[in-house]
Image (tube, rainbow, N blue to C red):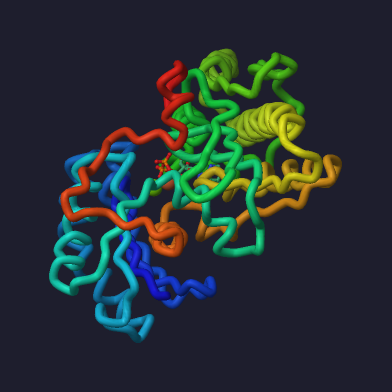
Length: 344
Ligand code: ATP
Ligand code: MG
Ligand code: FE
């Protein structure tokens, strides 16, 4: 079955066609980085307008590159949340119009589920698996038990990890977006130079915390002789990244212990593009006797192939949505855990 996917929940406008046998027929992503860079972060109104301007053309391009028309599709999938509501409305409304016009079923996809199921687009990994979901808005450990069946084992009690990368980059003056800039700067840095706090390490449970780390970066920076040298910045970036890696490994090890022996470890979301983190998690998986799956970088950051693939999984399971499905700014993968406390 062929599914068209549409993604517009943040600052990437994207469209893709994916087949049920895991072939990605097209995957076009237009980043709005240049539009947001002057503001040092994503401006929701600018994002929504940019989605309006570009989405039609990108969908046309995705269909053309795949060599298919709407009539060849099994379904049309679009992100229905969570995310910046203006952007979500643009993508979901476009998908509704296409579904109505073509008579094809609509599938409203949870953006986080798109990240969560991506490993199954690129590998044979079966359920259950342990997912470390690390992105701009989230930092969670989830037991993925099936399509639509997620049990949250841990989450951040303050900032998301991508947010921590972005804020650290801002403090260091490394520009936007922050994650790749910190990773790049860290390559030339000494990760042992600064003794930053290692939040949550050794604590019970599987939750995360990053706000103290961010504060420590700011205070360390203020204590250095000004203007701060490129080497100082590199050392601080490397020290920060090493702490994040250590925290990830500690929390993930505890979550793996809650799963049956040999449960695959999977990492997804934009921060999963970080090579240092990937390497450390791969070592952890090896020590734990767990297979390790990390999608290629272009499928870690926001894209529409992951939305199309989640659409494939839902379509196969017989789940489609009515045309009056609502866009959602918030939409936790595990509503029970989210209702019980920490932020989704
Ligand atoms: P969410 O998926 O939670 O709604 P989002 O869609 O904005 O949020 P993603 O696009 O999945 O998030 O990820 C973007 C985040 O990933 C940003 O915070 C960015 O800095 C971070 N990121 C991207 N590449 C890297 C990298 N190489 N190292 C660290 N962080 C990275
Ligand atoms: Mg983005
Ligand atoms: Fe995302």
